[in-house]
Image (cartoon, rainbow, N blue to C red):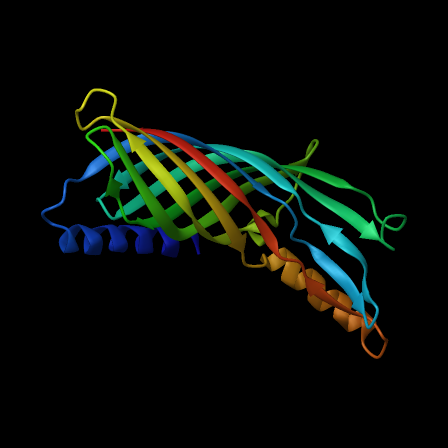
Length: 220
């Protein structure tokens, strides 16, 4: 899956590069911080949510990007802290898991630049981010199913470019809000729970994962 995403990213870069052949191609390096407020699974009945798990996440990364006026393509590495936290009726039935992750991520972001003056450009943005978990640990224990926690995000937000010396060099700040699709781990968890709950008044489903990403970069 990771190889397919990288191929897709390269293909999109060539396609966009051809579409905007007259546009200036830029490059840059940046840092990012992102979080996930929820995710996980929930146990449901006709009365509502009875409990489940949440998967809060906070991570930091560094990345390189290619900019072609109306699009930004990036590849980065990051690390973060991932929790698996029981809620409701599961609080006394499960332990809290505190995991550390190392990841590779690829992203594509479409944008529409609006030049306000010679120094400042703003843009709305919409795109995706695929986060590939390379390693997953709890203390000294390394998990072999790290790829089950890979996540695909759909992001939207705004950004601005500030050119401090009226040259092509600029500082870019981007703020995005995103929702993500359930990971394989969450889907498998729901499937297993529903097999156990079959015939009862309860059923399981995934929780919506969502969060913010802030990116600060230097482009040239």
